[in-house]
Length: 426
Image 1 (tube, rainbow, N blue to C red):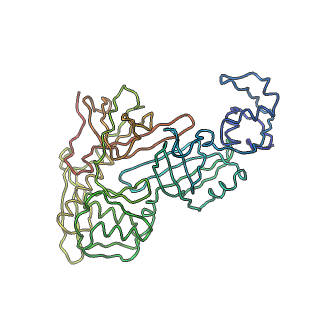
Image 2: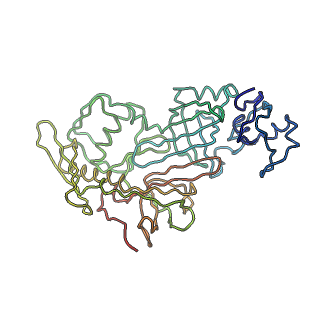
Image 3: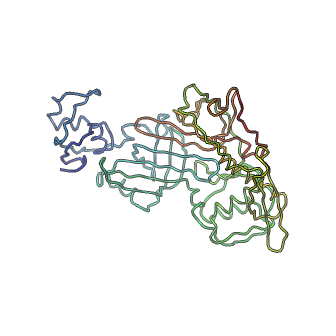
């Protein structure tokens, strides 16, 4: 007798068990109830619950039969090729093979250089040897994530966390796009370059770790001198320079490093308080995190310090934030000041709105760098509403259904335009 449902063994029913939950733990799907009932005759004469399934008795013994050909969650839910998935299908593919998840999350962003995912699957050691091999620790299998038919992420499975609890054995998985390698990896020699453009410098750095760079915007002229330390991370090194050119770094769905400018997407429709789709309305407007003046100071050995300031006129002048920048060209220092203000405001002014669908009002999957119009008196954004930029999207997949969380900010925090506070009285 086992402490949790295992195919081929007897199991003592615990309080709260249902045939659905027993099937899910034993086989990875909730749909093998008939197999359990067929080998436990007493169940066929039992009173049924609201779902029409036989009720269970605490402490009774059930035999959990083996299944000749075990089918995965994806086999049951999505008996379709990758090109023919339903729009709410969440598909994890490891080394070309679909892996059965019963819950998952995917986060797509426009300014952190890497997208990430997590998921959980019911796991019975030995029932699927090839899957067991893929899910061994520190294997780094190549990973693809699909929502519906659309590829969203290409990367690696990094975290494999086995767990044994009341619901049986599970494996919790975490991974990220291939671009996470530049977030984790340190800069390699040479540590100094002169008269090099951001495009040239980035291509050289990324080539060292096998990543390809895609440029959707002009990255400007050459830096007089660029220096890095052996302990610097590649992303931090590139992001520091990109900020001085007003350029964002993100990831493509194929795992390439994307250099682009914000605000190039489309408007995905309107979210209005009191109407369907948005699940709740909350915000955190913290005045202590915002400043009037953002002052950049840059200095190279043997050169006079260059300074520049960026101003947020909405805030009292007494509030000053000073930071260092590693380029001494006056124009670049000014861009660095503007960019620091923008990045800090992107965090301060971000609002999160949970929605009941992966799909925006225009019928397309939510995507960062697109915009959405918000009408909400609770958030002090009454009609006719304010159009804001989608900074990131978290897609949630559970057996009970799907939803998403969109994080939005004023577009000007990335485009460098004057911040006009959108809040107003009706």
